[in-house]
Image 1: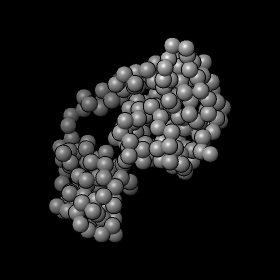
Image 2: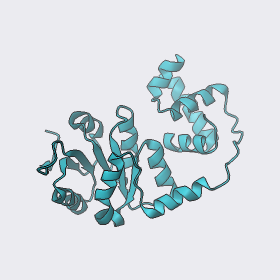
Image 3: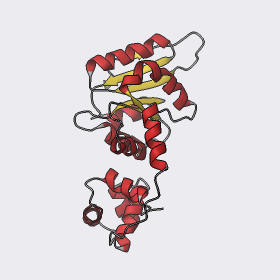
Image 4: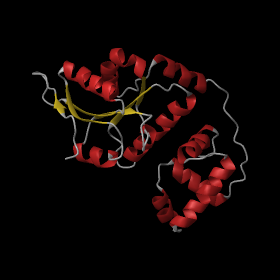
Length: 226
């Protein structure tokens, strides 16, 4: 049985409580968050987990409305987990819960597909409101995160640099930015998976990045893709 620490909290007036799963490696904080949500009587807490090793199976099995996702976890980190989820589920709302408020983590999380970003120091005051906001189509963020994003948007647009990408590399970078997996790219371009990996290695080298998230982030920021 995959589910752990399952708890149902349903108020008399709610026909279908919001279904939530939580990923947080700190056991004390994880239990505190479960208890905080339980006190509202408005949520069906499907499970709480210390890591994301089974994230794809869990999300497909229990079909949550909201996922609360820590970033810094052993094995698969929260940003990688969001990317995995978005490959098969675009509807679930994902709120990152983290101590990080730097550009890299914020934008990597957003590019991966997170809907909101809440610093842990604001959890007790902001979590319930953030869940309500994200379910209403909003993008809840801690104040410092909102200021960071606004500041970034106010910066002059960076002109596209010439990284000497070949036409094929540009094509693959565009497909990566569209959320395609390596296998999907190979199928789309009718080339082998090994060939895709070779092209992607060359792309990483030319862009001076070390991961898919970094490559896509740089491509979008510097207008290398549409």
